[in-house]
Image (cartoon, rainbow, N blue to C red):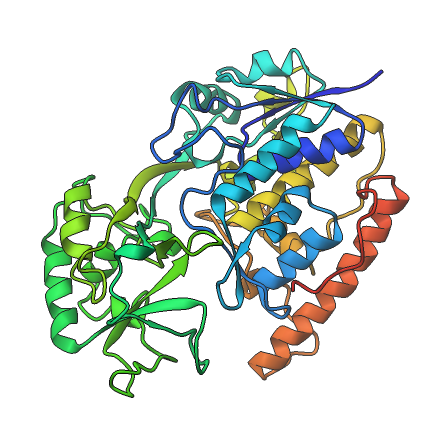
Length: 462
């Protein structure tokens, strides 16, 4: 008998889960409400649409983000392979042409003979569990109100929520290249980023305008309201006039060729598409009203006549209290969930793991867990020395208090024994330890019949 699995949500985690399960012989129904039911930030009905940024972060092998990419490579992630096929220049990071990437993932799903793409809104988890052998919830931070109520009935607790923001995108041919210069930090010559240099007076005038601009959500945000990695630029400025130039607008590693000196502050712009027709304002997530974005952001040197391909937006993010609700497989373990006729797994940002690559990896993880559970196979233990293993251990540890969404990072990894004092050497040691743990894990998955056919050797996060 061919087991049937319903995956709810066609974002990064849901698409990866659906493809992973279908590749392993399961019949998958992937439910995605877009485009019939829109969200506040999506622009298309494509699967795996990126709405905040087009960057999947660093590819350096000895960074936490690079270690995570090595896992995705080694374990044969279909969605991550699509990201590899559609890169845009971004220095040491992997950024993608978001339209080409989403089209690629959508085509993979639509062409798969074991996946039925259902363009509908799922509103009741219990009803979905009654018609499947397992359910994967991967509805992301913009889970609909109806489904949120259904999930809340299963969790037995209110959802936690924070506000998240996305940066604007401007058209390349509307920029002033007489003011902008191309350079990546600490690199000589042409780089992958455009840089808009502020002198002191320009910076002060910009901050004045930023602080006085009208916001869409008119409230004073506290630290618990906002996910730190996506703080709106105006909220950063509210923390202190110099806060942006020590964060998003930091000029370190840059030299303005017009002056031969480091700027007072600098905004970096990253290509949005492979042809370089549009650019993302890096770190300029915002809650400003659209007319205010035009007025204030055109005060950035070189953006005086910027044409906005997309304005920045702010929206509500929803996630569950994973340390008290999920097991290490990502399975929902509340009493109400246990009474359902099929197990429910939670993946992606809904589970509180933050980040694009993290979402892809969580979709892969719960898919492998569901496959093992339904086939009566023991899922090899996820090694906590890997980047995602450390994140999952943190996210499902009942001792984790005041849980907030988390990226992979060295701060949640098990310390080295013996300790390594040099930061560079320490990060390299973390990466080496993770590579060994990953290889052992991949071979255990292969022995259990769970590794993707053709999954290759670890590629070191390149």
